[in-house]
Image (cartoon, rainbow, N blue to C red; front, top):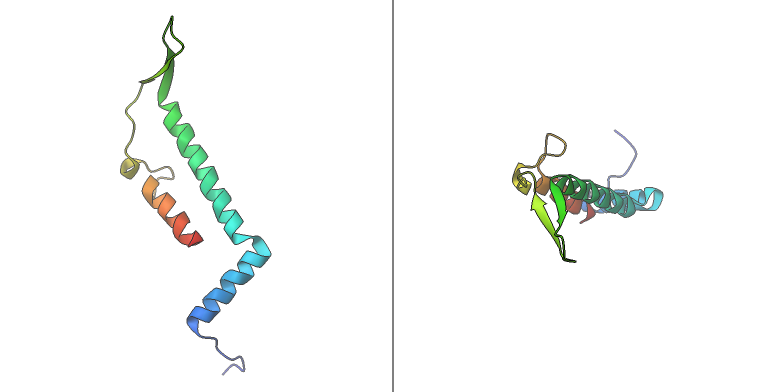
Length: 94
């Protein structure tokens, strides 16, 4: 057997998370990843819209050029839908 003492599960998990946070800024990395993902999702959504500026008016209207995909049906990476993408990142932060 090994001479190393075993640390209980939750304490070991916390120490691993703390080490990753100190060494790599885990919270910052996950937060930046979530922000980057959301920027790409917004770009995709905006790519499906066309802006129309009505003549003789300062109001701007958005005219749909393509159907907006519901979050449950949008698979940006081909594996996980939009809601799952966000949920996993938020769970990692938690």
